Image (cartoon, rainbow, N blue to C red; front, side, top):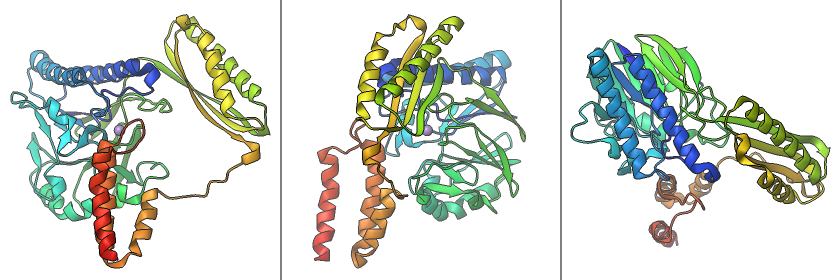
Length: 418
Ligand SMILES: [Mn+2]
């Protein structure tokens, strides 16, 4: 029994905006290659670990694309190998919330091969799937997964005790002890490797983490994260690809990105340099990469991270550099230069203390409210879910009407508190 596993395909993503349509193409290109690999490998089952779509920026043609690619997978396996393939999807944070998510776009009455798993399991209801000797349970993304997991653990454990030669759990959250969880991600947003002890699960397949992570075994459970199929952010360096499981044998099969992405650092370290220095260094890097691309006949995107210190206004670096970049011709294959300016004004050197997330602070403050703290924490939790789902991509804020419901509830509990 061969299983194809992929994750975080982010179909419909268009960041950075300057090359948004090219990026949209790149995610589709990666998806097509993943499907090609699954066909070639004659898998009998495909599992997607969440963030299939980028709901906020996707267009209807993106959902049509995925629908057709999944249909192509099913048809090709049937025609070329005479077998049926089952496809299991799980909801990631970029697919949208439970009542309003993009995975609905690929479901249709004739797609009997497709199952979106875990929406009942995450509410603590029994939900597991059995096919060709495999027992599968899914848990979609949840911002408070550590608490939710504790609540549903018994039901999941029961499900995993049912018939099956290989027991698989599919999730879309970070796992401490397996993933390198980025700083600022609150603990309630993560699980830990120890959470799966004594669960009776053979394999935990986890999306959400965008880098490929090598298989890791802990207390009889195999942890697997293939990572994204394309650079979700330009800073992601790959490799990108999919896992193919054959029983307990795991192989990583790479995907070749549509465009090359080159990350370059321009750093004065502890030295204080004039703005011109940063501009000159960057222009030199841009010229070198342009000729490199041209010589190879390849298209590429460049990301320059500037850091260090200056005595001038650091913002003037961006302006001068943008002018220089605009002068460069596009005939070289250099599609876009992304600037990340972290140069600091030495006169206003700021010291950032090691802050936790804003949410942690909110929780700490609310605890002191005594009797009303429970309702207050509920609002904070629901607000973070709503922000995930509905915040404007440009400002990161809610619209007035979305916000007003929360404001009303705040006023009510504060009145109660006197
Ligand atoms: Mn993702």
